[in-house]
Length: 425
Ligand code: HEM
Image (cartoon, rainbow, N blue to C red; front, side):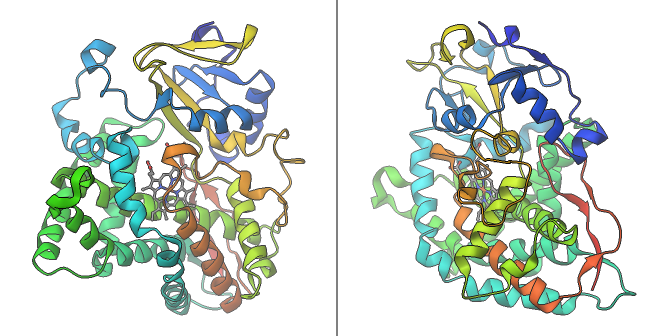
C-alpha cells in the first residue's frame, strides 16, 4: 500500500492536552498498527519500538535527499530567500547530511568525543552544577524557576567549554539557539521563521568571528581541532569546509544543550512529583544505578519526540518498502516518514509495564531517545554524565527542593521540555 492508505489519524500537535501528555494518543496510534498516516503532518509515522529502532538504522531512509534529486525534481518549492540564512547553516550540518559527507564530518567530531575526553569533563560539570546551585534563591519563601537557573545554563556551560566558545556568551547563544529551534516546532508561524533566520545569520557571523580569533590564537578545545582539520591539507578526504565548520560548531552548541536542558528539567519534575526517588542519584559510588535511573527518565519522558527521514530508496533513487504482506508500505523517493521516539519508548513489547517509571529497569537504556544508527547522538555519553552529576549535586545540596507551582510543558512539539519549573528549596 501507499502511505495514504494507512489508518488515518488526526491529532493537532498544538492541542494543549496532547502537548502536556502525548502518551494516551501514542497508545491509540500504536493500537492501529505499526504505522499511521498522521493527517496533521501529512506523512506516515511509525510508533512501535521494533520499527522505529529498525528504521533509524535503515540506510534506505536518510536525513538528506537533495544529494539524490533536486528540489525541483522532487516537486518541492524553492527555499524562500528570507529563510536562506537558516538553510545555509543547516544544510552543512552533520545531522542533515548522509554518507559520504556525513561519514567524513562525523569522524572528525567523534575524535573529540572519546570516552576519555568525556570522563575528563566530570569535575567541570560538578563545579558548574555547584556554582549554579549556590547561586539559587534558598528557603521556602523564595520560589524561582529551575529551568533558567539550572537546567539550561548547566549543559550550555559544558558544551561551550568543550567547544571553546566563551562561556560568558552563554545567554546570547541560548537566545539564538531557542530562536533557531523554533523552525522545527509544530504550528510555527511566519514570525517564528523570521526569528529563526535572523538568529541563524547572527549566530553564523558570530561563529565566523570566533573561528578567525581561534585560528590566530589556537587553544586545545574542540573548535581548534575542527579548525586544524579544516586547515590540514594532508588530511585527505577528512577536510572540513568553512561552511561545514560553522554549521557543525553551531549544531554542537544547539544540540549540546537544548535536549539536555529538557532532560534535566523533566527528571527533576519527575522527582518533585513523587515518581522518582532522588536518593538514587545521591551516592557518587553508585554511578551504574544513577545512570540506569537517568536512562529511565529519558525513556519515560523523552526530550525529543519525533525525528523524520526521507525515503532514499533501494537502490538509491528508487522506492523503499517497509513491512511485509498486507502491512507493506511503499515510499517513493523523497517522501517523509516520522519516527515517534516518545511512543516507541512506551511500547509494552519492548518495555514491560511501560507507563511505570522504574529507576532500576533492566533494559532502560534500550530507549530510542538518543536515536540509533549513523545519526545516533554524538553527545549521548556526555548527556548521561550531565544528568547523573547534575542531579546528584542538585538533590544533595537542596534536599528540601519542592514544587512551588504545577509545571507545564512548552507548546513546541516535537520538543518535550518544561515551560517553567517553579520550585522552592
Ligand atoms: C538528553 C540529551 C540529548 C538527547 C535526548 C539527544 C537526542 C539526539 C537524537 C535523537 C539524535 C538523532 C537525531 C536523528 O536521528 O535524526 C541526536 C543527534 C545528535 N546529537 Fe544529541 N541529544 C542529547 C544531547 C546531546 C549533546 C549533549 C550533544 C553534544 C555535545 C549532542 C549532539 C548531537 C549531534 C552532533 C547529533 C547529530 C549526530 C549525527 O547526525 O551524526 N546531543 N541527538
